[in-house]
Length: 304
Image 1: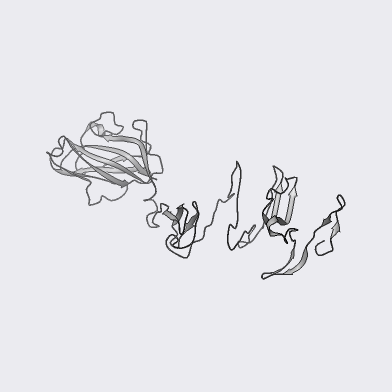
Image 2: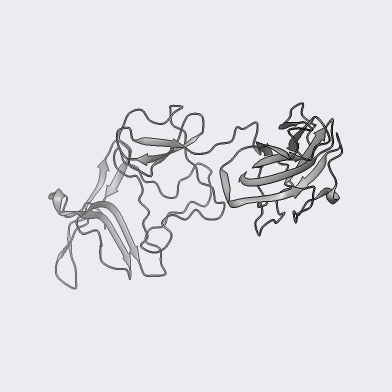
């Protein structure tokens, strides 16, 4: 038992190191099992070693406080606390280096089970680190809650801010994805487009509701869940001067325009690039004002 004199192991006759009991530390009085190689730091060794039909210690040259190995269907180290929101099953901490290393040769290195919650606290600064040495692949959360990833090791390294959404516009931002090729989802002249308005020009001030997500053109479509689109708006065969605009379905018509045309510029055609949000169902509105015109909508990317 801990604190007793060394006992003799029955099988080999070698002494069994038990260690010291009630070691006074800065935190608590504990029973400490000391690595037999503690006097020779370069040789490695473990303070506590447990194995359930597992391999021998694979960290032959590494000094470790606790190591647990298991058979192929077992658990090397297991920490469990049945109740208590402030309890910790397993704690890894170091003043320098790595607090916890999760490693798998061919499987999952880190698995967050059940609730799937992963907590990463904020740093004390609102921007990427200005001092310190960092490795490529490190991720931090700054004081504002934005995520940053280190894409180049160094002091302080090269950092990129991960795409973020403003909390007041949770459905209006995200990453930009480009389609393999542009697609035409609206052509009021027909010409094989999936949305044609019956082949008629748009009636001034009467919006055309366009289902963007899921509408297939040239074997491609914007996927469900997209929050915005990148595209071109074209007016052609205009009856006179006017303007055209796009905006998310379900929102009030904005006092803006995406394209201005006339009987001259709209014949044969005039186009302009646009970015627009779409509603939760993946729809947007297209409208012309003052003079009727045929409208074309081409999409080459989306926000997700």
